[in-house]
Length: 609
Image (spheres, rainbow, N blue to C red):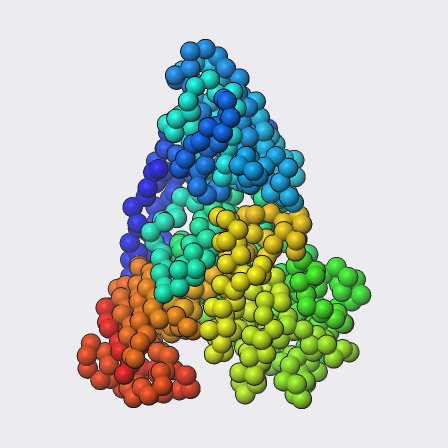
């Protein structure tokens, strides 16, 4: 496998992106590949940031006379090369690609959108054949995101059966040509904790992000290979936890500006993507070029005189989505003023105000801020039930679903005094939403003192957790919690990989506090864990940290040059203060946190005693 040396960033985040050489200049051929012509993919977009990587099998086993089962260890999007140098004559073999096994063989009738393909291949002695699965017209023709025709058809698979091979099939005769983002460095991020299952979940989710970069933009999965705003935003969060380069995220953003999708709540997530890009990179040049387009994603045309977004009967039927699939909505009652849709609108207005301020557009920033305040007042008056401390699903119903409360809490819309009670209520409801809503539910729990509950949900027994995916043998996260919850689901959906960003951000405890990571927030949420260590890439270089909790809480942190950090440690019972490098420092207790009064830089050891 070709590897790329890790690129060390200059101290200036903006300079980092200007200084990166083009990927075309960096590209190193893996092998001399035969060129395949594939008319269905001739209109493929530029995916220069994606390359094909040759991978050897991890195991080959003879399962019947002339039949070999090849295991590549994990699912990846790709196809095969078969080398017939040792054949004594021409041969025709049958090749079966599969994501699933059944009774020790490739499952030829897998459920839902789980992939299987079969082709016959004529082999000539001394030649290397590129073996591609059959075309799927649904995901290999526009509007699907297309891959280069010269690569041949790509499909997600882990296992291959080769039938009719005349001798022993050796590992040097078969390779998977897997498509990945060429900037991805497997060693750039790491996560290890005192819970082995949590580590397995992180590994599953982290690899899922890498594996689903095959299209050059963030897509929903293999069934459609389309970019959707919600999928893209959730994937962006997890991608930045593994790769600091913004290009695939920005390519996705550009595609979605040209080809937006239909759900009401998906449009505001374009603002979330732009805000995340700015916080990650600090790049106002890119932001300025996309700022005007962001204004079209605010749902302003649906706002009433009180600032709240209205939903017509048509939008209620086909627009307001809440969660997906539909039966994951916890009985949500749709009305003309929808709590979830308005929560998204309010968060988008707040972030637009901050983006306008970053660009020096102070009048527009004030306008967005005032819109948010006006709508926020109506939101609380019309949708919050103070007797229960919960939000109704909408105006005209008293039903209070999980979703009507998790989104306002995740977006900081809940009055401060009501947050602990609502977080406890959400924790008690369990995972009553989909893998998509889980991103926001877990954010709400981590940010409001329920980190133990959040971690318990991630590794919970039963079939509605990531533990279930791990125990089921998944190597890429699924579209839904289980096949029975979405019978047509695919098994390669990045929106199901949210622990890839949640664990670094909250459990390891590192997030950007200012745009471009000039200042970070280090704030571990330990839950029931006793130790965590890991690293993550930033535009300024590698950030690494580890913490241990016994009678004291000890954190060791290394920041890249040009970065400082505000440190907040979870307050342990009986703790009286904080020491840095063995010396006491000024810190103040604020609720559940000890906050250092001065930022830190470089490598430091911080202890709460």
